[in-house]
Image (cartoon, rainbow, N blue to C red; front, side, top):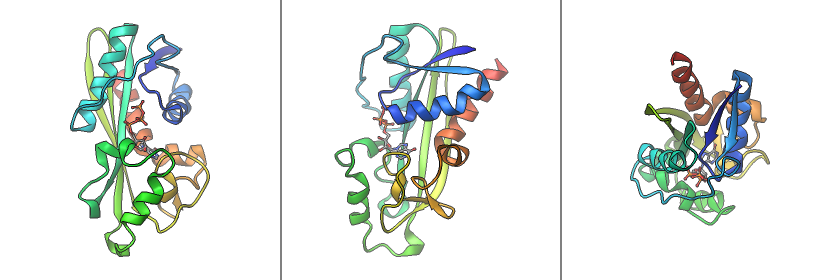
Length: 189
Ligand code: ITT
């Protein structure tokens, strides 16, 4: 099995990537397991810049193939916010409540949003980025116990992402799409 390091400190992202890539024959190990105990400053202004910052910082330490994920929620009615600032929008665990409050006067037809994910890949010979997106709507209350972050308020089809099983979420998610694109790039050689 090919081994690849995921430059993340987010255990939920790590779990999702392992669920998606293991059946494709790729073993995902965390940056910590690979010996890179760092948290690079994400001072880019795009998902792609931040993903590349994280991937390069960890590659410089581990020197084996690395990918990083920069992702977030873009809400149309908020001009794309929280976007690249999704992790810093509110204290962990309070992001859904804050978003629902900001959206309380927004009517149904203006609640469109997307989850965006950019994955940056770096090895000794190459580096590139791939993207994934998932379109949905912001609900009116938190629903579901699965997933993380904004999943309880992100409605995709009939369910929030937190009401989906891991398999259901991975099949439609921004991260699932970006990881599939990564796999295709790696398979091409
Ligand atoms: P790393 O940088 O260590 O990977 P992080 O959580 O700080 O972890 P980001 O900077 O990419 O990652 O911020 C992404 C934030 O966007 C994340 O903390 C969640 O709040 C939100 N997010 C991203 N993907 C999500 C998903 O699948 N479901 C729910 N929220 C998500």
